[in-house]
Length: 387
Image (cartoon, rainbow, N blue to C red):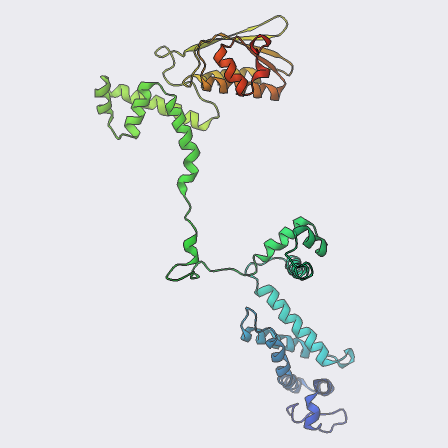
């Protein structure tokens, strides 16, 4: 007995067709008939009630048809909401129509909130994002311009940090396909993005290797460059240098070990071949006075080739001193100090400042004094060297 055509009333009579247009009345008759119905008839009455209210559910679904979700999916969600309404309906709780509209619209909004976002974000952040968008629109209309971040945050009663989070959340609402065509022709959005450059991560290592190779003795540098950049064999290099192939192999092994150490540490290691064959151009002598004052005498030229060793030695000395210790660098016997040597003095001065050690440089020649003054090392110079 379809409810649209023949519905039982509380008195057991049939209701006229025009009365069935009111869903509230139909739902009340359904609930009354369901009380005395057995399992099979109750199931049939439930199906008839759902079919009767289906047009209302579909009308509610069509309200949201202009969004990103297909209308068929929205209708399915609305009908599932209607099933919940029919299953839970009780006449004593109020109007069936009001209950159905509230429940079905809630199901539709929940579906759109959960499914229409390209990236799933928590519900509070979704609501905050929509509130920020609404406040920005209202402020734009009131002010006649785009509101500032502070104005938007004040209207929404949130902090600037929450405002940034809300805008980041809004960016996840809709995604774009990298295959989306742009402009005319076959160009796609993905064509605007570059490929990862694996060589970019090697820039720092390449620069370090270049500096280390530049610090090598001339013969060692020639062997390395000829082997790895010139593509020459060890036999060819040995013939040109009037030595044996075994000697060239030893040079390469020694230099590669030195380069590896230089790449894996923050300090320039003692360069290969700096023993008896190629002594360094300077030497260091350290003396400690009875008062605990340390004098470091440097003798010889300091240039790019040996500045790394001087830097390592002086920094090691400074790092071992307690705060308040006085260290004096005696540089009167340094006839030549290039820019690399001045950088060593700057590094030593900064390290001493950090540790609370008083370091002074004395005996610099006029050229080095002028360079030190330009680089901000005047406080490091002895009083007689500041003029």
